[in-house]
Image 1 (cartoon, helix red, strand yellow):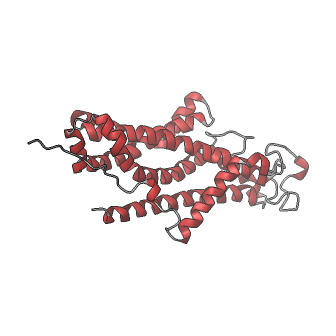
Image 2: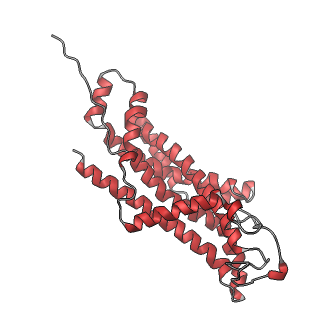
Image 3: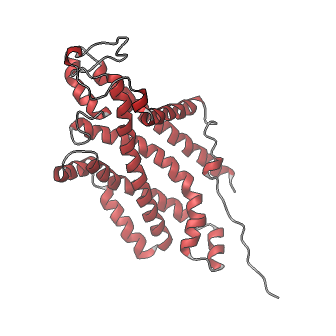
Length: 292
């Protein structure tokens, strides 16, 4: 008499089961804010009333008027138009950072957890080494070599954020690997690559997605700081961090909006991403407790 080992595909709470609008009003408002930011970034050329780089020295530091709802900066450029276009660089840079760091970190974390032994030790030490280097310092060093712009900061911050994702993925992947269903698939002759891609990765994806949402806010703040310091997006291109830098002189002249408006946008975006990430993480934690 022979017995056949069968397994039922094990699925922990996936992204489709995370009810985004069931986390309370603050979470819902944060999701709405992020949705508006994305729409603004996509349709900025259609929404902006003026060319964001058009100079009008005769309208320097004009306050809020019917023609300029948020006033103008020292060069007479419409602040609202620059804010709308600044959402593009403000979101595109962090998106690239999160995408690259999540991909690399997930790959390194899964390989370290699955292989174990010397591979785990080597990858863990490599991630610890990169983790010890401040991301902003790495970005400044790279900018010193390649010159200012978006490319160097995005590459540097992608490298700096990879260990955060890698260490998280390694931890949860090791826990997932110890579950009986993984052993059952291996006993049946499934390759490690197949088990990881078809079962392990989908089961850890919600946690990685929640961490990525929080990392997006941090990356946005870091890239804005680099632009503020002059290492990121360069004037006259519209960027929130660069706008704060340009608006410092206007503050001394009593005009607050050139620096205040982009600052508020950055704070709203960072807080919204943080709340969404925390909300997703809390939801996953509750699901974990409910799942036997």
